[in-house]
Image (tube, rainbow, N blue to C red):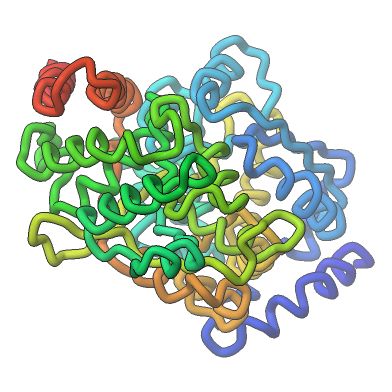
Amino acid sequence: MLRQAASLALLGSALTAVGSTTAAAATTKAGPSLDFEGVTLKVLCNSPHVSMYNNFLAPAWQQSTGGTLRATAVDYTRLADTIIQDVRSGTGEFDCFDYYYYLLGTIADAGALVDLTSWIAGQPDLNTGDFLPSVYDPYTVHRNRRYGLPYDGDQHLIFYNQELLVRYGLKPPRTWDAYDAAAKKITEGGGGAYYGAAVTGQPDPMVLGPAFINRLVGYGGDLVDRSGRPTLTTHAALAAAQHLIDIAPYALPTPTETGLGAATDAFMAGRAALVETWTGVAQRAADPALSKVVGKWGVTALPLGGGNTRRRTPLNGGYGVGVSAASKNRDAALEFLKWLTSADEMLRETTQKNSAIDPNRTSVLHSTAYAANTPSAVDLIRAGLDGTPMVWPNGPAGPGNLQRLVDQLALAIEGKQSAATALRNAQAAWTA
């Protein structure tokens, strides 16, 4: 009873902030009958989430249930392999996996995740109708079975240095041609002190992948058609790849060596005028302890191109959370998933200072508390997650195919082959 009282006190302010727009907020918290004292749940997650788990969620879980929560971080490049190895080796160190959604087919087919389909159907207090339709199925469904719950609804926006744009008489770019022209003008005027853009070009699906996909969607293209066949040789794909080649000389050196952290750091230090990155940068850029561009930046939607007028948000990144098939604490793990992804908990997580977590539920996305915490970007975030985003292929072949694509694009950016050759090679590899 004392633990439950402490938990309710901790959650009270968040529930009040949700207000009438989140009537479901109080329906999925850990109830007073949940007593996991003496049970230690271990979560494997990607590095950006480990602080949230260990420093924020763990104390709240302990207050609510008496249980212990410990998270271990692994670099995103090793996430799928570590998950599969933990289960197949029989080690079973982890109870829950926090996974990139495009890895879902790979880890589910490997038998690493518990099939949650029947369990979810028997949990009315999950309020699954509140999960954002744009992420619920893409993050959790494989072969018509559900293996997780949606956790972190990621997307990209364009962040710009207002001071540098004004200095060169430029406006936030609405098209990819305008983006490239602005990058060229600022870089040529910067003399190496600053650059027009920071382009994440490392040949990894989570680095160069979004850079290409942002342009592909802007031109009205897609990675695959409705039947799942690759569409990498369309005019939209060719235009997207060519833009990556054309902007390379005017981007932060060197695009194919620029990773996620380097690009964001350059923008926060005032050394890059434009960067396409995750929405969480809005909170970091406004923090004087982290940013040198406080009060000097803005944010806008991903540009369009080639006469395309249909705006679609690509689901770049994004996470689901599932239960390990090797978990020795399955009951506690299931309750943790329910608690973690509930409206009240997600509101608290998405409104923490410098949070890396984005909404998974309609009630959280449209709450006044979330809007107050992310004022400069909230309308853009809502437009993206309320829409019909472009979903990355998340079947078992997805990660390998995406790697083949970015390997070919990197060669083109480095001038070793043309955009057309890169895309033909990638199309052939995907088809094979």
